[in-house]
Structure formats: structure tokens, C-alpha cells
Length: 383
Image 1: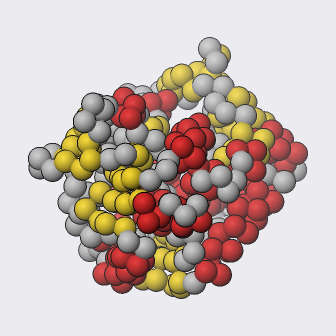
Image 2: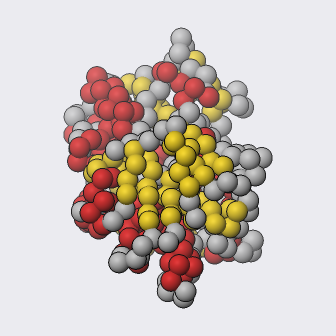
Image 3: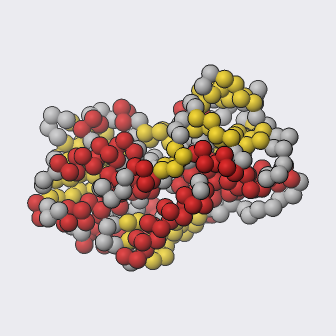
């Protein structure tokens, strides 16, 4: 009998738990999932919470629902990972493992940017609710959407927020009294995804009257003067500041021999097995930037499928699943418009060049698909 630990109940950990539960049903193998929260949150819906379109209870489900499928769920803090001993300390107790999947994600670290207390963001559920209150108080002026650095969950999110704010302000008849500025390190909107996607997003922002400030690397916020300061000396005044908070790999996964100098788990990009121990896999936002993949839920999802397949093959004696699909797709919701971009990262993983990206569709109807996907996600993985 093998014990499999899954650290993290986000999209990656949730998919691994479901696939292993199906594949190992009726066996003596034990599956444990550990997360600090009792809930799994559907993070793509956090901007909708910030704009009042959704409530927190609508975008979460209890992780304990996994126990119906044979997964033991432990709510607790991962305090230490001891690779040589194959043990993890959780809530002061040691748990042993035979195989482990580390999918602890990225943590937001607002304190790493001076003056961040002046900013709002929807990258956590509490942050989304705080941002909602600020938007409700807003009666006109300049809204600045800034980015603290290149590493953050969901690269398209700042552009979606800009479009959704335009839509919301029009509904409140405040758009003519408001200005929206999006300041980003990229030279053009989503330029890393190539000209096809960048061109469409640039057109949408222009149609909505959103001013784009490219090559803007934020270094600090001045609360007294209410300006966002860039490393090149540029300053952007604001009345309301929405800021992507600094992100770092989850500190819970930091153990000797498992990390790169930048703090990311060191993995084989072909298998996602940790270099320190091939019985440990690391996936998702806490590892992807180190192998030039985006910090996106869809990438963690495909990694989770692939890793679960490897574990099932190891325990059942045959490889029964697909290879890793290095593809990212996400529906970008702009309120009254929506885009479905897709990128294939095969060339990046092969060190052969940039990703191959394109736009699969653009229409208001695509926004409905995003709404339905949330329900499908919960029904599939936490029913």
C-alpha cells in the first residue's frame, strides 16, 4: 500500500486528487490532501466578487467534499517538508509519504512593495471584498491598474479588470467622469503572447478608452501624493489604485535541496519530478515561472493530469494516460466583450523559441461559457 500526499487544494491539487481517487478506487492505496483553508476557491471569479457580480459563497466549495470520493482531507498548515525522511510536518504532527505532489501555489506579499496599503486588489477573496467597497465609494476620477512585477497569478487578469471596470462604470453612469489607466511592464498588452493576441486586446482597450502605459516597472506607491512610481522616474497620479500584489512561491514548499536560487522548486520539466527526490512532484504557480510557463490555473490543471497519470502508472504497472499538454487557454471577460486566447508552450519547453499563440474566438457569447465553466468545475471536482 502506498500513501500519496497532495499539498495544496487549488486547481492542481484538486485535479490530482480526483484523478487518483478514480484510478485507485477499490485499492488499499491512501490519498491525503492538505490545505490551510477548508474551501477550494474558484479564483477566476474573484474579479466578479470585487465588482459585486458574485458573492464569496458562490465561488467556493468545501474540500471535505473530496472525502465522498475516498480522499482524506486535512485542514492545516504545511510547516516543513523533510525530503530525506519522506515526511511532512502539518499542524505540529509528522505525516509520512511514499509519493507526494506539491501544489501550494503562489502567495501574495503586499508588504514587499512600499506604500501598498493604498492599493486594492482581487487576488484573494478578502482583497476582492475590500476592492468592492472601494469601487462602491468611487464617484469619479482616475483609476490606475498597476502591476508589481512579472510573476503573478493569471497574466491576463489586469486587462480583464480594466475592461470590467469600464463596463461597471458605464452601468453606474460614472464613465464620463472617470479615467482608466493600465500600467504594465510589457511594452504592449499581452505582448509576450504574440501579435495576434496583443492586437485584439489593444483594440478592446482602445475601444473602451483605457490608456495603456507600457514598459512601466512599478517600484513604490507614495500614499501622501497618491502616485504610483516607476523605476524609470515616471509617476502616475491616481484617485483609486488597483494593484497586482507581489507574488512569491509558497514558503511552505521551501526545503533544502528542493529549490532554485530564486525560490522555485527545481524540477525536471519533462516529468515535474523534483530533482531532490523523484518521488516528489511539484506543479503549478510555485514552479512554472522557473520553467518559463505562466502562473495560470489551466497550466496547473494539465500538469496535474500528467502527474496523476505518472503516479497511476507507477502504482498500477502500466502507463494509462496522456503526455503533458503544454497549452494555456483562458476566457478573458471584458464585461460587454470576451476573448478566448490560446498558447502552445511546446517550443518554450524544448528551448526552441517563443510560444505559438492565437485567438480562438471573440464574442459576448464566450463570456457565458466562462460563467458556465465555474459551475462545471465544481460539479466535476467537488460534487
